[in-house]
Length: 366
Image 1: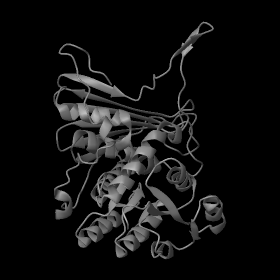
Image 2: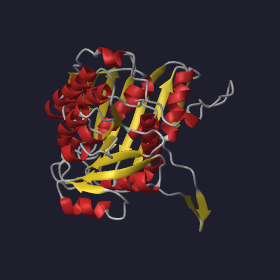
Image 3: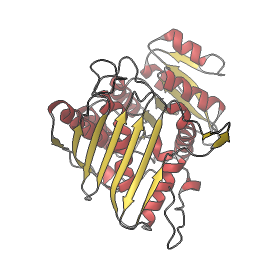
């Protein structure tokens, strides 16, 4: 690739996520262009490619990756298709931004880790976009600064208005809590060693047979606990919140109090209705960071090891959900390629890395 030219990207998968990434690359970020889109549904791919200058349409990922104008790959296809696409990208030694999950299970994720290890250098950034959200980045920087002391507990809340009709009880863990799994590892700098899933009586608003909500407890090798309330049919809005409880204070993000109104005898604000609204800027920053580092010949952000670790934790969580009780997380030995990259790597926008300064007796800001 000529580093003076825009990065040519093939987007694999043109569903909601893939189509949004095509829009983002074409209209929002700089330094890149969409040169190909891929989908088994050729008509849908053609519709997404329409209006994008120089964008070709493919139904086979391998054909797109072999094109001369493709310098990098963004994978936004369904999870079961990720492994084959990643291995093909490795054959061409192409940089990849792969939406989560890396793959749907730990065994296939580990195969991807091993295949990248065989290349001898990193090629993949996994799409855990919360690492690029300004509030999460500020919380990360504050914890890293040591101003609050050692983290003891992390409380997470993850609520959706309503679940899709295809959602299953295990998908609350594998598709939703997966984000909190990565956030816990990243914010605390710990590996997760065990998972316990508790199941209250399902909400009347949950579809028949769906175990919603769930309460997930994550134990870490650093001695901290992280809990997750996952409630995907709350009915009122999309909320993602986190509160770190440390030895000398607490910090909370996700309250969404940017605008509060007082009118007609009432006060209040608005609640985001889905992830696309809440994390729009995070997705923009994530893709821009990937483009910028790729153009410099670098790979940063969440690694295939992070994707594998999340898959292993989620598998333990699904087992706890189905069988009950505490389930230990079993991880393979970390290969040499990733040993220099501990779980704290993968900062978001550099402008947000500075920890907020706290006055000696002031309450911590979240």
